[in-house]
Length: 146
Image (cartoon, rainbow, N blue to C red):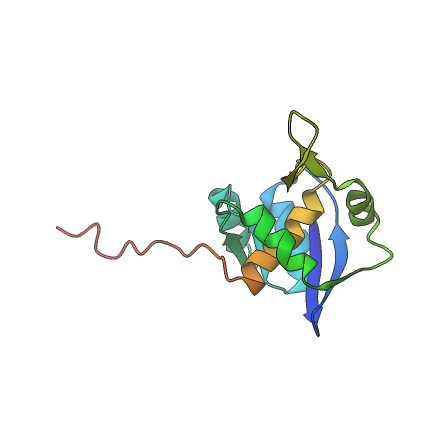
Protein backbone atom coordinates (compact mmCIF):
# COMPACT_ATOMS: atom_id res chain seq x y z
CA UNK A 1 0.00 0.00 0.00
CA UNK A 2 1.17 3.48 -0.72
CA UNK A 3 0.13 7.10 -0.52
CA UNK A 4 1.58 10.18 -2.18
CA UNK A 5 1.98 13.08 0.24
CA UNK A 6 2.82 16.70 -0.30
CA UNK A 7 2.88 19.82 1.81
CA UNK A 8 2.03 23.31 0.62
CA UNK A 9 1.66 26.21 3.07
CA UNK A 10 1.30 23.93 6.12
CA UNK A 11 -1.37 21.87 4.36
CA UNK A 12 -0.78 18.12 4.06
CA UNK A 13 -2.25 16.65 0.86
CA UNK A 14 -2.60 12.87 0.62
CA UNK A 15 -3.55 10.67 -2.33
CA UNK A 16 -3.91 6.89 -2.05
CA UNK A 17 -1.89 5.24 -4.81
CA UNK A 18 -2.63 1.58 -4.16
CA UNK A 19 -3.87 -0.65 -1.37
CA UNK A 20 -2.73 -4.26 -1.52
CA UNK A 21 -1.26 -6.56 1.09
CA UNK A 22 1.17 -9.50 0.99
CA UNK A 23 2.97 -8.14 -2.07
CA UNK A 24 6.37 -9.40 -3.17
CA UNK A 25 9.19 -6.85 -3.29
CA UNK A 26 9.18 -7.00 -7.10
CA UNK A 27 5.46 -6.15 -7.23
CA UNK A 28 5.92 -3.28 -4.76
CA UNK A 29 8.80 -1.88 -6.80
CA UNK A 30 6.81 -2.20 -10.03
CA UNK A 31 3.92 -0.26 -8.49
CA UNK A 32 6.15 2.48 -7.04
CA UNK A 33 8.65 3.00 -9.87
CA UNK A 34 6.35 4.94 -12.25
CA UNK A 35 5.83 7.63 -9.60
CA UNK A 36 9.56 8.49 -9.35
CA UNK A 37 9.20 9.77 -5.80
CA UNK A 38 11.02 9.41 -2.51
CA UNK A 39 9.49 6.55 -0.55
CA UNK A 40 9.64 6.43 3.25
CA UNK A 41 9.09 2.92 4.59
CA UNK A 42 8.77 0.94 7.79
CA UNK A 43 12.30 0.04 8.87
CA UNK A 44 11.22 -3.32 10.31
CA UNK A 45 12.34 -5.34 7.26
CA UNK A 46 15.69 -4.01 5.92
CA UNK A 47 15.91 -6.90 3.44
CA UNK A 48 12.64 -5.88 1.78
CA UNK A 49 13.75 -2.24 1.61
CA UNK A 50 17.05 -3.24 0.01
CA UNK A 51 15.30 -5.46 -2.56
CA UNK A 52 12.99 -2.59 -3.52
CA UNK A 53 15.94 -0.17 -3.66
CA UNK A 54 17.83 -2.63 -5.90
CA UNK A 55 14.91 -2.42 -8.34
CA UNK A 56 15.40 1.33 -8.75
CA UNK A 57 13.02 2.80 -6.18
CA UNK A 58 14.26 5.75 -4.12
CA UNK A 59 13.30 4.21 -0.74
CA UNK A 60 14.42 5.12 2.79
CA UNK A 61 13.82 3.27 6.07
CA UNK A 62 12.25 5.47 8.75
CA UNK A 63 13.46 5.34 12.34
CA UNK A 64 10.66 4.04 14.57
CA UNK A 65 11.95 5.47 17.84
CA UNK A 66 10.08 5.29 21.18
CA UNK A 67 7.24 7.79 20.88
CA UNK A 68 7.45 7.97 17.08
CA UNK A 69 3.76 7.15 16.61
CA UNK A 70 2.71 10.08 18.80
CA UNK A 71 5.36 12.38 17.26
CA UNK A 72 4.09 11.63 13.75
CA UNK A 73 0.45 12.10 14.73
CA UNK A 74 1.24 15.37 16.53
CA UNK A 75 3.05 16.71 13.45
CA UNK A 76 0.11 15.75 11.23
CA UNK A 77 -2.29 17.47 13.65
CA UNK A 78 -0.23 20.68 13.31
CA UNK A 79 -1.27 20.91 9.64
CA UNK A 80 -4.49 21.13 7.69
CA UNK A 81 -5.14 17.67 6.27
CA UNK A 82 -6.60 17.03 2.81
CA UNK A 83 -7.39 13.65 1.22
CA UNK A 84 -8.37 13.03 -2.40
CA UNK A 85 -11.86 11.69 -3.05
CA UNK A 86 -10.48 8.56 -4.71
CA UNK A 87 -8.58 7.58 -1.52
CA UNK A 88 -11.35 5.18 -0.49
CA UNK A 89 -9.29 2.92 1.80
CA UNK A 90 -7.63 5.88 3.52
CA UNK A 91 -11.00 7.53 4.16
CA UNK A 92 -12.25 4.22 5.60
CA UNK A 93 -9.20 3.99 7.86
CA UNK A 94 -9.61 7.58 9.02
CA UNK A 95 -13.22 6.88 10.02
CA UNK A 96 -12.11 3.87 12.09
CA UNK A 97 -8.88 5.36 13.53
CA UNK A 98 -9.40 5.74 17.29
CA UNK A 99 -7.38 6.15 20.47
CA UNK A 100 -6.78 3.10 22.61
CA UNK A 101 -8.09 2.74 26.16
CA UNK A 102 -6.51 1.38 29.31
CA UNK A 103 -8.07 -1.41 31.42
CA UNK A 104 -10.27 1.17 33.18
CA UNK A 105 -11.68 2.49 29.90
CA UNK A 106 -9.69 5.74 29.91
CA UNK A 107 -8.17 6.94 26.65
CA UNK A 108 -4.39 6.71 26.37
CA UNK A 109 -1.95 8.48 24.03
CA UNK A 110 -1.71 5.59 21.54
CA UNK A 111 -4.04 4.76 18.67
CA UNK A 112 -5.59 1.30 18.44
CA UNK A 113 -3.31 -0.84 16.25
CA UNK A 114 -5.99 -1.51 13.62
CA UNK A 115 -7.15 0.29 10.48
CA UNK A 116 -3.82 2.08 10.29
CA UNK A 117 -1.88 0.83 7.26
CA UNK A 118 -2.20 4.00 5.21
CA UNK A 119 -2.03 6.19 8.32
CA UNK A 120 1.30 4.52 9.08
CA UNK A 121 2.46 5.34 5.54
CA UNK A 122 1.56 9.00 6.10
CA UNK A 123 3.41 8.99 9.42
CA UNK A 124 6.50 7.52 7.72
CA UNK A 125 6.38 10.41 5.24
CA UNK A 126 6.12 12.92 8.09
CA UNK A 127 8.86 11.25 10.14
CA UNK A 128 11.19 10.89 7.17
CA UNK A 129 10.54 14.02 5.16
CA UNK A 130 9.65 16.57 7.84
CA UNK A 131 11.38 15.27 10.96
CA UNK A 132 14.42 13.76 9.20
CA UNK A 133 14.16 10.43 11.03
CA UNK A 134 15.73 8.30 8.29
CA UNK A 135 17.97 5.42 9.29
CA UNK A 136 21.42 5.87 7.83
CA UNK A 137 23.41 2.86 6.62
CA UNK A 138 26.18 1.84 9.00
CA UNK A 139 29.70 2.72 7.88
CA UNK A 140 31.45 -0.63 7.58
CA UNK A 141 34.62 0.84 6.06
CA UNK A 142 37.71 -0.97 7.28
CA UNK A 143 36.07 -3.74 9.30
CA UNK A 144 37.38 -6.42 6.96
CA UNK A 145 41.01 -5.25 6.90
CA UNK A 146 43.84 -7.24 8.48
